[in-house]
Image (cartoon, rainbow, N blue to C red; front, side, top):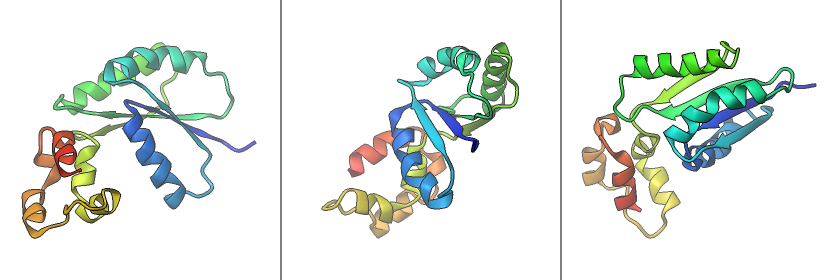
Length: 145
């Protein structure tokens, strides 16, 4: 039986992103995305889901926005939650600050996603030249859409 990867995600937007991205880069990957309704929901469910999941050979990845938190402290807290479940081999990845920063880094793709909106302009390229500096990139993506 092939191994499978389960992604425990903060929100449905990350699921949509991964379901479009992963098959392009890893066409043979068997994966499942489990989206939560925000970071509180994800954080509460991690120990419960990990201890209840009995499928042999399954691998887990937790993907969460850092939302201006200290990344080291956040990762340590998530690691502790994983250990509460009896697992300590979970891959934890933090998106700094929000997933939407990645979208601001590719204005041409945003323009394709929102036909009819002029997104990839010289002004926007200058404005979003360092998307990681934006505190609430999700707000900026909403404005562009």
